[in-house]
Image (cartoon, rainbow, N blue to C red; front, side, top):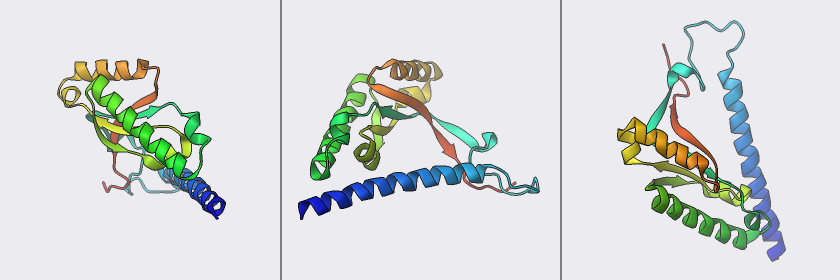
Length: 157
C-alpha cells in the first residue's frame, strides 16, 4: 500500500515538471508575434521595453543534491524541506539576504534549492548590488543567480 502512494507521488512530481515545461513553452510561443499581426496589438512576454529588473532582488538556484533525487515519498519531502531551510539560512547569514519565497516543488523534483531573495542595501546602492551579485555568482554552492524581473504578460499600446 505504501508503494502505491510513492508511485503516485512521483507521478505528481513528473506531472508538475511537465506542467512547468508547458508554461515555459507557452511563454516562448506567446512571445513570438503571429504572422500579419498589427503593430498596435498587445506586447507579450520577453519584450525588452516591458521588462524591468527589481533592484536588490534575485532568483538564486543552488546545485542539485543527489540525496534528494534518489529518495522517495515522505523522506524526499523532508530532505527537500531541510535543504531549503539550511540554504535559506546560509543566504541570510553569509550575504544578509531576506528570503521572500522558496520553491518547494522544484526542490522536491530536481533536488535544487531555488529562492527569491532581497537585499535592502543592494536595492539602494548600485555598487553594492553589483558586488553582491558578483559574490553570489562566485559562490561554489550556487549554480546560478539572476536579477528578479518584472514582466507584463500583456499590455496595450
